[in-house]
Length: 225
Picture (cartoon, rainbow, N blue to C red):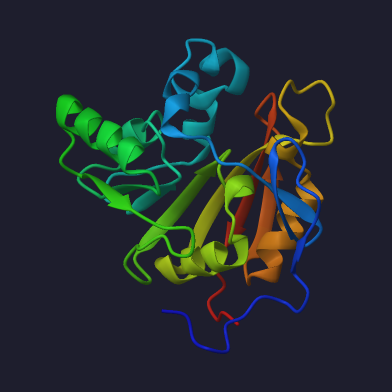
Protein backbone atom coordinates (compact mmCIF):
# COMPACT_ATOMS: atom_id res chain seq x y z
CA UNK A 1 0.00 0.00 0.00
CA UNK A 2 1.01 3.57 -0.59
CA UNK A 3 2.48 5.49 2.29
CA UNK A 4 0.14 7.87 4.11
CA UNK A 5 2.17 10.78 2.76
CA UNK A 6 1.61 9.57 -0.81
CA UNK A 7 -1.16 11.99 -1.70
CA UNK A 8 -2.11 13.73 -4.95
CA UNK A 9 -1.01 17.30 -5.53
CA UNK A 10 -3.19 19.81 -3.67
CA UNK A 11 -6.23 20.68 -5.74
CA UNK A 12 -5.53 17.99 -8.33
CA UNK A 13 -9.04 16.58 -8.09
CA UNK A 14 -12.12 18.69 -8.62
CA UNK A 15 -15.70 18.57 -9.80
CA UNK A 16 -17.64 19.99 -12.71
CA UNK A 17 -21.06 19.70 -14.26
CA UNK A 18 -20.95 16.24 -15.86
CA UNK A 19 -20.75 16.29 -19.63
CA UNK A 20 -22.51 13.66 -21.73
CA UNK A 21 -19.51 11.33 -21.62
CA UNK A 22 -17.98 12.38 -18.30
CA UNK A 23 -18.40 11.61 -14.61
CA UNK A 24 -18.27 15.18 -13.28
CA UNK A 25 -14.88 14.57 -11.63
CA UNK A 26 -11.76 16.32 -12.86
CA UNK A 27 -8.05 15.63 -12.50
CA UNK A 28 -5.52 18.36 -13.26
CA UNK A 29 -8.16 20.15 -15.28
CA UNK A 30 -9.37 17.15 -17.32
CA UNK A 31 -12.85 15.70 -16.90
CA UNK A 32 -12.68 11.93 -16.46
CA UNK A 33 -14.66 9.87 -18.97
CA UNK A 34 -17.13 7.09 -18.29
CA UNK A 35 -15.48 3.68 -18.63
CA UNK A 36 -16.43 1.20 -21.34
CA UNK A 37 -18.43 -1.73 -20.01
CA UNK A 38 -17.93 -5.35 -21.05
CA UNK A 39 -20.75 -4.76 -23.56
CA UNK A 40 -18.07 -2.97 -25.61
CA UNK A 41 -16.12 -6.17 -26.35
CA UNK A 42 -17.34 -6.28 -29.99
CA UNK A 43 -15.89 -2.78 -30.51
CA UNK A 44 -12.55 -3.88 -29.05
CA UNK A 45 -12.59 -6.90 -31.38
CA UNK A 46 -13.78 -5.07 -34.53
CA UNK A 47 -12.18 -6.08 -37.82
CA UNK A 48 -11.23 -2.48 -38.65
CA UNK A 49 -9.11 -2.04 -35.55
CA UNK A 50 -5.82 -2.95 -37.22
CA UNK A 51 -6.28 -0.47 -40.08
CA UNK A 52 -7.51 2.29 -37.76
CA UNK A 53 -5.04 1.85 -34.90
CA UNK A 54 -2.19 -0.24 -36.39
CA UNK A 55 -2.12 -2.52 -33.38
CA UNK A 56 0.59 -4.63 -35.03
CA UNK A 57 2.84 -1.55 -35.21
CA UNK A 58 2.13 -0.85 -31.56
CA UNK A 59 3.14 -4.38 -30.57
CA UNK A 60 6.37 -4.03 -32.56
CA UNK A 61 7.09 -0.69 -30.84
CA UNK A 62 6.96 -2.39 -27.43
CA UNK A 63 10.11 -4.41 -28.30
CA UNK A 64 8.91 -7.40 -26.28
CA UNK A 65 11.41 -10.18 -25.61
CA UNK A 66 11.13 -13.70 -24.18
CA UNK A 67 11.37 -13.71 -20.40
CA UNK A 68 10.01 -10.20 -19.82
CA UNK A 69 7.32 -9.51 -17.26
CA UNK A 70 4.67 -7.23 -18.76
CA UNK A 71 1.22 -5.97 -17.83
CA UNK A 72 -1.71 -4.78 -19.93
CA UNK A 73 -3.72 -2.48 -17.64
CA UNK A 74 -7.37 -2.23 -18.58
CA UNK A 75 -6.81 -5.25 -20.80
CA UNK A 76 -10.47 -5.64 -21.72
CA UNK A 77 -10.96 -8.51 -24.16
CA UNK A 78 -7.24 -9.29 -24.32
CA UNK A 79 -6.88 -8.27 -27.95
CA UNK A 80 -3.33 -7.05 -27.19
CA UNK A 81 -2.60 -9.10 -24.08
CA UNK A 82 -2.66 -12.38 -26.01
CA UNK A 83 0.06 -11.42 -28.55
CA UNK A 84 2.04 -9.83 -25.72
CA UNK A 85 1.95 -13.15 -23.84
CA UNK A 86 3.14 -15.00 -26.93
CA UNK A 87 6.08 -12.66 -27.42
CA UNK A 88 7.33 -12.71 -23.81
CA UNK A 89 6.85 -16.44 -23.15
CA UNK A 90 8.07 -18.02 -20.91
CA UNK A 91 7.85 -14.63 -19.19
CA UNK A 92 4.61 -13.48 -17.60
CA UNK A 93 1.97 -11.27 -19.18
CA UNK A 94 -0.57 -9.88 -16.73
CA UNK A 95 -3.93 -8.70 -17.97
CA UNK A 96 -5.78 -6.55 -15.44
CA UNK A 97 -9.30 -5.20 -15.51
CA UNK A 98 -11.86 -3.96 -12.98
CA UNK A 99 -14.75 -5.83 -14.64
CA UNK A 100 -15.10 -9.56 -13.82
CA UNK A 101 -16.82 -10.08 -17.18
CA UNK A 102 -13.83 -8.70 -19.07
CA UNK A 103 -11.48 -10.82 -16.98
CA UNK A 104 -13.53 -13.98 -17.62
CA UNK A 105 -13.39 -13.30 -21.39
CA UNK A 106 -9.62 -12.74 -21.21
CA UNK A 107 -8.93 -15.86 -19.17
CA UNK A 108 -11.09 -18.03 -21.46
CA UNK A 109 -9.13 -16.66 -24.39
CA UNK A 110 -5.83 -17.51 -22.70
CA UNK A 111 -7.00 -21.11 -22.19
CA UNK A 112 -8.16 -21.40 -25.81
CA UNK A 113 -4.85 -19.98 -27.06
CA UNK A 114 -2.82 -22.26 -24.76
CA UNK A 115 -1.08 -19.43 -22.91
CA UNK A 116 -0.44 -20.46 -19.30
CA UNK A 117 1.85 -17.44 -18.91
CA UNK A 118 -1.10 -15.04 -19.33
CA UNK A 119 -2.35 -14.21 -15.85
CA UNK A 120 -5.60 -12.36 -15.28
CA UNK A 121 -5.85 -9.99 -12.30
CA UNK A 122 -9.01 -8.32 -11.04
CA UNK A 123 -7.96 -4.81 -10.12
CA UNK A 124 -9.94 -1.94 -8.68
CA UNK A 125 -10.09 1.79 -9.31
CA UNK A 126 -7.35 2.53 -6.77
CA UNK A 127 -4.81 -0.25 -7.31
CA UNK A 128 -3.67 -2.54 -10.13
CA UNK A 129 -2.81 -5.31 -7.64
CA UNK A 130 0.46 -6.23 -9.34
CA UNK A 131 3.51 -7.50 -7.43
CA UNK A 132 5.81 -4.66 -6.39
CA UNK A 133 8.93 -3.83 -8.41
CA UNK A 134 8.33 -6.80 -10.69
CA UNK A 135 7.15 -5.51 -14.07
CA UNK A 136 9.37 -4.49 -17.00
CA UNK A 137 6.68 -2.87 -19.13
CA UNK A 138 3.14 -1.61 -18.59
CA UNK A 139 0.82 -1.02 -21.53
CA UNK A 140 -2.21 1.28 -21.23
CA UNK A 141 -4.32 1.45 -24.38
CA UNK A 142 -7.28 3.86 -24.43
CA UNK A 143 -7.96 3.11 -20.76
CA UNK A 144 -6.16 5.64 -18.59
CA UNK A 145 -8.53 8.52 -19.43
CA UNK A 146 -11.36 6.46 -17.84
CA UNK A 147 -9.63 5.92 -14.49
CA UNK A 148 -11.67 7.70 -11.82
CA UNK A 149 -8.62 7.77 -9.50
CA UNK A 150 -5.79 8.46 -11.99
CA UNK A 151 -3.27 9.62 -9.35
CA UNK A 152 -3.72 6.51 -7.24
CA UNK A 153 -3.59 4.23 -10.27
CA UNK A 154 -0.48 5.90 -11.66
CA UNK A 155 1.26 5.55 -8.29
CA UNK A 156 0.19 1.90 -8.13
CA UNK A 157 1.70 1.33 -11.58
CA UNK A 158 4.88 3.12 -10.50
CA UNK A 159 5.22 0.75 -7.53
CA UNK A 160 4.64 -2.32 -9.73
CA UNK A 161 7.43 -1.39 -12.15
CA UNK A 162 11.04 -2.26 -11.62
CA UNK A 163 13.36 0.77 -11.46
CA UNK A 164 13.85 1.71 -15.09
CA UNK A 165 10.64 -0.10 -16.04
CA UNK A 166 8.61 1.60 -18.75
CA UNK A 167 5.03 2.63 -19.43
CA UNK A 168 3.62 2.77 -22.96
CA UNK A 169 0.62 5.11 -22.73
CA UNK A 170 -1.66 5.01 -25.77
CA UNK A 171 -4.43 7.61 -26.06
CA UNK A 172 -6.35 9.00 -29.01
CA UNK A 173 -5.00 12.41 -30.06
CA UNK A 174 -7.13 15.26 -28.71
CA UNK A 175 -5.13 17.72 -30.82
CA UNK A 176 -6.54 16.19 -34.02
CA UNK A 177 -10.22 16.92 -34.71
CA UNK A 178 -10.15 14.37 -37.53
CA UNK A 179 -9.74 11.49 -35.09
CA UNK A 180 -13.34 10.18 -34.93
CA UNK A 181 -13.50 9.60 -31.16
CA UNK A 182 -15.57 11.45 -28.55
CA UNK A 183 -13.67 14.36 -27.01
CA UNK A 184 -13.45 12.99 -23.45
CA UNK A 185 -11.99 9.75 -24.79
CA UNK A 186 -8.99 11.61 -26.23
CA UNK A 187 -6.01 13.25 -24.53
CA UNK A 188 -3.39 15.75 -25.60
CA UNK A 189 0.27 14.82 -25.36
CA UNK A 190 0.76 17.73 -22.96
CA UNK A 191 -1.94 16.41 -20.62
CA UNK A 192 -0.49 12.88 -20.75
CA UNK A 193 2.88 14.25 -19.71
CA UNK A 194 1.45 16.53 -17.07
CA UNK A 195 -0.40 13.73 -15.32
CA UNK A 196 2.30 11.06 -15.43
CA UNK A 197 5.11 13.42 -14.50
CA UNK A 198 3.01 14.63 -11.55
CA UNK A 199 2.86 11.02 -10.35
CA UNK A 200 6.65 10.62 -10.45
CA UNK A 201 7.32 9.20 -13.92
CA UNK A 202 10.01 10.45 -16.26
CA UNK A 203 8.97 11.18 -19.85
CA UNK A 204 11.18 9.39 -22.37
CA UNK A 205 9.74 10.17 -25.81
CA UNK A 206 6.55 10.32 -27.83
CA UNK A 207 6.42 7.91 -30.75
CA UNK A 208 4.43 9.23 -33.75
CA UNK A 209 3.99 5.94 -35.60
CA UNK A 210 0.30 5.34 -34.83
CA UNK A 211 -2.31 6.97 -37.10
CA UNK A 212 -4.87 8.08 -34.49
CA UNK A 213 -3.15 7.74 -31.13
CA UNK A 214 -0.29 9.11 -29.10
CA UNK A 215 2.25 6.52 -27.96
CA UNK A 216 3.90 8.24 -25.01
CA UNK A 217 6.75 6.51 -23.21
CA UNK A 218 7.54 7.02 -19.52
CA UNK A 219 9.85 5.25 -17.11
CA UNK A 220 10.10 4.68 -13.40
CA UNK A 221 13.19 6.58 -12.20
CA UNK A 222 15.80 4.72 -10.18
CA UNK A 223 14.76 6.87 -7.21
CA UNK A 224 11.06 7.67 -6.99
CA UNK A 225 9.47 10.46 -4.99
